[in-house]
Length: 222
Image (cartoon, rainbow, N blue to C red; front, side, top):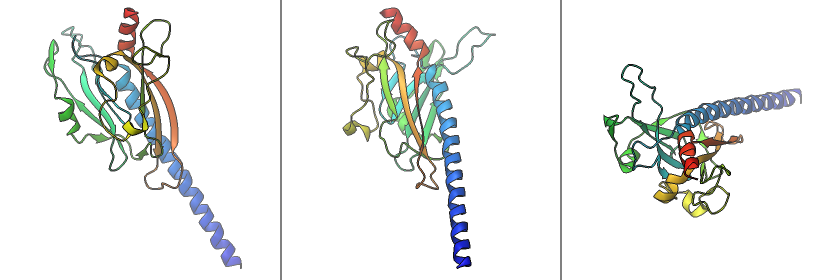
């Protein structure tokens, strides 16, 4: 009887420890990934006068240009934006990032197409299964006036653009090029579950990221 009770206590303790480790791992991955994504997305900026800052706006993938480089005090030139892709790997569930530096010159940068960028493996930012119970990681809204900071991309109603369930499983944009050009705020609803212990619930957070360059430009048009 005593041995049975002791065994039960040991099993319970081990499970509690495993749960605590899984929660810690998930929370750490959530924090690391969200900070990287927010830092890149906040400074999304078009590389030229005819290209959108965001070129693909999907529920589980976003491709955009990020002005993440530092201003060169010597040449007095701002480096061309980097092309960045974030997406949830459908195989392992990890959130991956691909970054492609501009070719050409800062005044006339060149980049591979979205199709070519999608062919690149990218880097898993931090271990975990991302958004295991919800399809939508990214939702989008735009600024069409200085009075409402979060309008639907087409400016019709003050709600975010949430991709439908039918669209959620596929990569690629769910917005038109015109709508993509109006996006000035991206809502990130992130879940991260420890890949080694999927019986433990995911760590979750939601964050609205204002694209400061786009928001300022679009408010100026209002």
